[in-house]
Amino acid sequence: MIEPLQGIDLTALYLDQRAQHVLQRLLNHIEGLPAELNALRAENQRLRDEMARLKGEQGKPTIQANRAPAQAGAPVPRKEPQSKSSGLAGQGLPRNARIQIDREEVIRLDRSQLPTDVEHRGYREVVVQNLLFTTDTVRYRLERLYARSTGQLYEASLPAALQGQSFGSELQAFVLMLYFELRVPEEKILHLLQAQGLVISAGQISNILIQKHLDRFAEERKAVLRAGLQTTSYQHLDDTGARVAGVNHYFSTLCNPYYSSFFTHRHKNYETVAGLLSVLEEPTPCTSSPAAGTGVEVPPSPERRPEPAEAPKLLGDYVPILISDDAPQFRHQTDDQGLCWVHEERHYKKLHPFFAVHQHLVEDFRREIWDYYDRLKVYAAAPTEALKQELSAAFAALFSRTTGYEALDQRIARTRQKKAELLLVLDFPAVPLENNEAERALREYVIKRKISNGTRTTEGTQAWEVFLSLVDTCRKNGVNFYRYLCDRISHAYQMPALDSLVLAHARASPG
Figure 1 (spheres, rainbow, N blue to C red):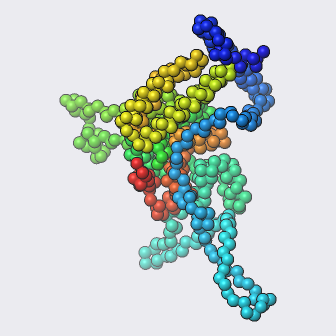
Figure 2: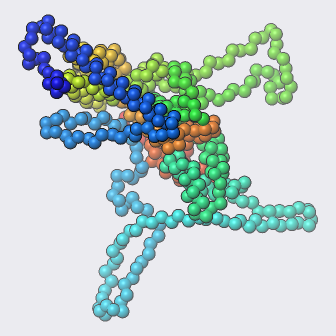
Figure 3: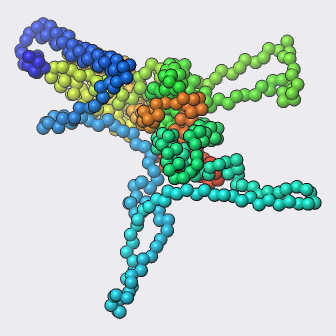
């Protein structure tokens, strides 16, 4: 009974217009029944899982079904476009050219068993990569001198980076890299270090991660954010769920191809997004009093009212164009907003029609969306006024279509209402057509959230924001995160500031 219904085709029945209209409405009504049934089944399973959890049992595991082999002639699903991102420097070079040689050994041939007339013909090179993982615990003996003439004791000083420290710069950088870049949990870091013979506690590891270096790197993260806002006329924005001390929060990213910056906030609303960049606002000291800075309190003059405080800057004061999805908290934040075509097409991908004729309608329309998307990319590479008008008219024609499948027609109508945001590229060809940059930036956080289940303290939350921002910015600019940490923690400062690298990378990029 099910299979014959699924294969019904109205065009093959040769019905009159009124009968075909009635049958089409009936099919649309039936379409909602399988979707509703699947939703009820999923809800029922969630309730069963929750009951099992409350009983101390395990819920049903989420296991994806095996992918069916592609049938001959079946349409191949199109892969969603991915934005390009900077990789490590030299990644495109041959393997041997990328290997850095640390030392060289010459292995000579034993000539005692060889003919006497052998002649030297050079060497054949074999490169063997290895890693030495060993401790380097140093006992510093600080010389002490005493002067009878002054009655004072003089003592040699430790290097500045080691003063007041129990652990070296490389070890502290290693801990930070393991936790934030490689997503290793704290207890695993503790086990690894103690297995190597280091005497270190869980509290000392936590101190390295969220307290000792947070203020220093928070300032550099702020400088990177300021620089990143200057590199492009647009910024990507997206958010995902977060957990802080067991309470639901949200984790957002503001980024472009040259940097990433992350933020944690309690609510997901317009006001929160508008104040996202309040971290850049420095507190302004009060200087209106003539005795400011003297320690003398002077009451305000009754004849002169205090000047009103300057209104805080909002996101739109820093960002002229915002690229995002169509979530309500992102609307009307900036002068212009571009919506993500990939996100918009996912709405069509989520349609799961029951009847084969409706399935073909959805597949065909999704294919036309991607064809139109390719035309927009061609325009962005070489914009012309004639092509702009042509694409605008093509959008209106494509998203004014009526297919007869009610769910698809409703989705088409919703897309038509977003024409200005989806076609922002026609006025600003440099603006991306998708928000993959932000989604890719959040992916690292999502994986770490699954491992650590969020943060527990205010300092830990801020550390995640700061160090994950620096990790992704280093990745985009080809900077080795571990070496960058060593440079800063050791006070060497031989590596350039990240904000200068962000600006230089943007200047060197085409377009």
